Length: 157
Image 1 (spheres, rainbow, N blue to C red):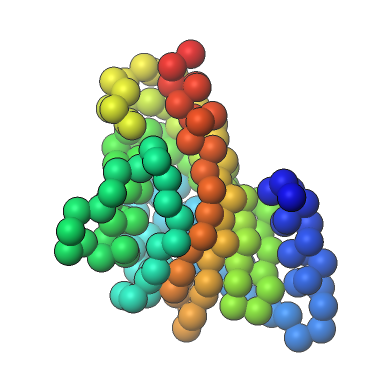
Image 2: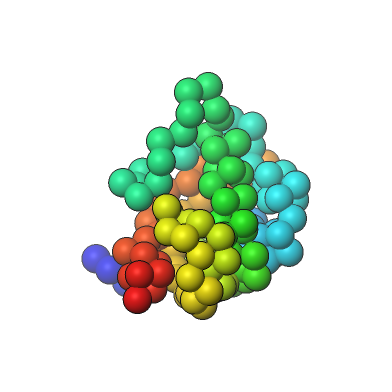
């Protein structure tokens, strides 16, 4: 199943009786904090016991002893450094109970080393499709897939 089909299925689930819509605010706050380059607000979105379930051959393994929350904040801090004009949009956002699915579109100009690639000055646009589990208004867990191959292709173009 492709990403858009999965999001469409979640849209149907979200329309069922008993499904809440409040969790979408977390995805929108995620995008807004990154677009504002506010790492303090970004870090505040995550529960202290946040669990990261996404793995990627492109992302370095976290150093020993670093929490999943701190590793995630560090990962996005590096993105903000590399793309200092980064803007993030969450669309669509679908909520089903305590689960939020969102497609995040990232855009920015490559101005510092990123994924080991020296600054190119190129404008990049890439997406990630993410599922967030929300507990007490905070992101408690994450699963997702980013278009790292598409990003790298733009940086190497």
